[in-house]
Image (tube, rainbow, N blue to C red; front, side, top):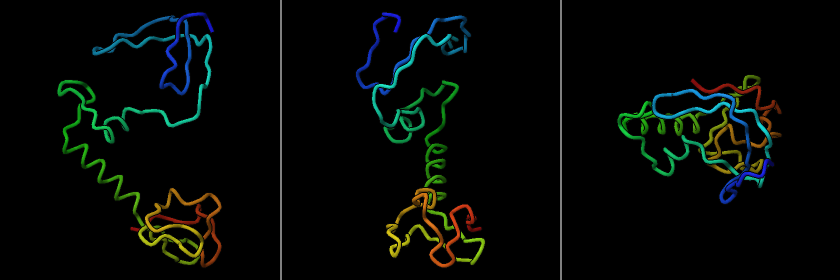
Length: 137
C-alpha cells in the first residue's frame, strides 16, 4: 500500500492507484489510474448499481443520464422473473424441466430456476447435461 488512508469498513476489497488522466463525463469525472496495489479483504457479494436500484429501491434523479421511469424498472424486473421461471427442454429426449416443480427426486427444490441448478445436474430421463437443454418457446 502507498500509505494513504483507506476506508475498509463495509468493503470487500480495496485498491489504490496513481491518477494518470481524467475524463469529464458531464455528471461526474472519471479518473484513469495505474493500479499501485489491490487487496481482497473478505468474501461477499458486492453492491452493484442494478442491485441498489432494484432491491434497495435506490432512485436515480429524473435528469440523470441513467434515469429509468418506475414503469420501465418494473417491466425489467418482471422480465427477469419471467425468464428465471422459464421451462427448459432436453434436446436429447424432450424432458421438460419446470422450475415451478423442480426435480425433487434429484434434490432440486420447487422454485429453482434452470440457471441455479447444481453444476452436476443432469436430465433425469436420459442423463444429458445442462448444456443439452434449450429454453421453451
